[in-house]
Image 1 (tube, rainbow, N blue to C red):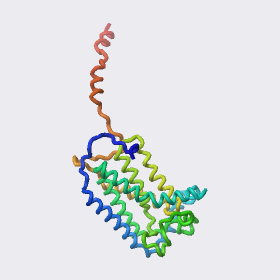
Image 2: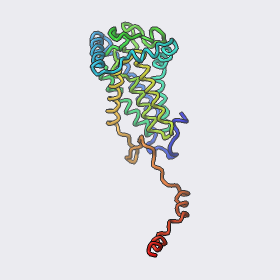
Image 3: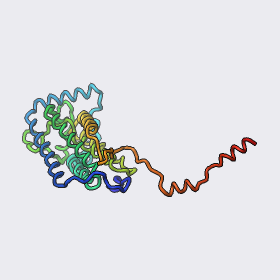
Image 4: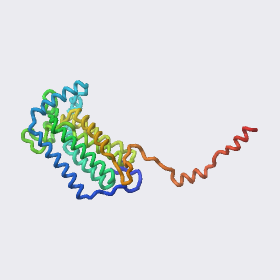
Length: 280
């Protein structure tokens, strides 16, 4: 992360680092609530398939590009599909954890803000999962898409009827995309490296992966983005001085001591001589 997370200045954060044990318990607790909460809608299979048909129809009405156009890019060879499945299975959660750990150690003020935003986003997603169960496009016959994880591997899901570790009918919103977008935004606003905008590649690649592997619809990412926008508007980052430490704009550079000294040494244009010349 060194090249992309170069700090703008060496001043310490204005907010003290939260107690580690409390944060670990809080993050683990939120994750467990989310995992157990997803199980509450496991039995709503028929409703999940009906909602899938509705979402597929809405996307066609909105003239969104077909998910199959993305999947076709991955099906040119086994390697692309396998890499996409691996990215889907291994990057999502570890990347978010690494993001929070780095902020906790290096940017405590940004950590508190990011943790609250992620918690609000995840809570809102859980509510939507409960009220709007949704089968992913790989389960929708009308979509005509390939379950790439099942065909090319690796797969993180078992048969829906016997899978007790995850709820496969919680496609909307896509927390894969929502978390990835928050990771990128958090790293962009917490750092000042010229390369920090490259973090947007993470949600971009995630979007291609979740759609191309037929695990999510376009609408799942759109709704996740909307929920994240609401969370960012509600959770305002604050320092101990009451100021907002987060900004997408580059920091204002004040003149250095050497620069001010140089300005004093540079003689100003003698205006009186110019006026005198005009009079003559």
